[in-house]
Image (cartoon, rainbow over all chains, first blue to last red; front, side, top):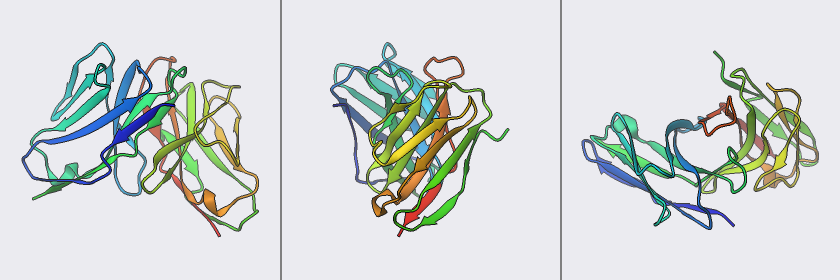
Length: 113
Length: 114
């Protein structure tokens, strides 16, 4: 069955540094991958989508890479700020379901001043 | 623009009681979802509706039923609540034209079954 793995340990970094979060998946070749941000007590909010034929996608201080050979996506936040502290989730479409999304458990990021 | 609206926000049930969680979206999306989120487990898909009139099971459908009432509304029913169904439930929608698009989430329903 499909499986998504994100680092369950919180990532603690200093303000101004680059945060890098990892999403690994198995038993599947998705057409795309998405990243979401979730704050405590709130629903996830979409950040970026990257397609299987794209190696890299950028949006302001965010960068996502997608390596279909390694079955891995990396999510980078450059010049991190305390306001970036949140849980970050990756999501993939279910096999056979183009928009049927499954999510990883998420990685909590804490940016310290 | 309300986006995805869930009701209620909080609910406490006794074991064996039934209830329906309501969800409505005003973005003309085709696809709607129900997820549950438990600590350390992330979001798990309960049921999915690709379009009005269709529903499909997700990862954890047991103990739940759904109804896609129309394009806007997708409800989740617990027929006989169990403590294992204590969780935060999120409704989401996506896909104006069926292509790969972002999912928009509601604010969640915090359900406790005692």
